[in-house]
View (cartoon, rainbow, N blue to C red):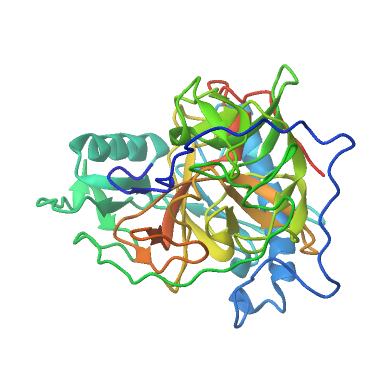
Length: 422
């Protein structure tokens, strides 16, 4: 989480449990939207990077991420403390890999562009990954930052300062420290609340039934991705701060879902012991119609465009991954990432914690899982979309915990788990 930031958990608490609903048997029918309608509100205006459509952008992003994951896998197998950073921004039309020092011959094949693959540009990183990790640790230990991460190109550290911090160091161990793009050390101001939206049905995003869809409401948070754990037990991934181990989770209708468990020490991840279906709620926060099938999952890289599906804000798109946490220990996927809405007009808010962070398949019909919403920066507030209550806070800059960390780190309780697809 972002230190003293806005944790995106709803303050409402289930007052009393209703009768537990049995799992649908046969499985509940998939909601059907009217022909020609779409639940995902893609940003208006020109698509970034001169792409004709968002599906063109997401199609190239999938190819960039696939190549980036292969490079990371090869580097881990060879115990390389590289790449320092990878930028998979579709508008670059190429994968940019930042490497500190000389590229070993054993990695040159992976860093080349073979027939049918995206172009790869190997660029020099000024500082090593180990030096950047040490600088990040010192800044975090000082208590003066709410975020400290390596610059994607390895040129220094990007920070967001805690409100009231008096000393803003310009360097740590001669590594430059600079303010993250759009950040302010001076706190934030309150933003007027906006309106509500409404529709309803027998089961919907705000009051789902088992097997639950990703993006459904929990009493204080949002359902993340449906999983099968290593022992094949069903589980719903969500944010760890939504409930302590052993506490009960309730859905939006106060029906008992299951018990919180599997809290991660390295990320803000936990699970609810309940069954999920391979679909995600799309569209607005009061929605019984729009869903998409879950296609699979991918790694997360700087420059990726992602969307969120919170139970209080609904589906929001147009966010860009701006930073990722350093990998600790070296050679493992980093736990967290940070995304920004470049026009600073909207973002997830309280009650969206644990909800899906995703991209789309090339044709836009299915979602690709990337993480779960964690927290928003308190110095990046925007008017909330979707459900509102007095004092609700939303942010155009937010953090999320990565799915590739959950599945790929041996220290994660979800190592060996698999995503339920639809």
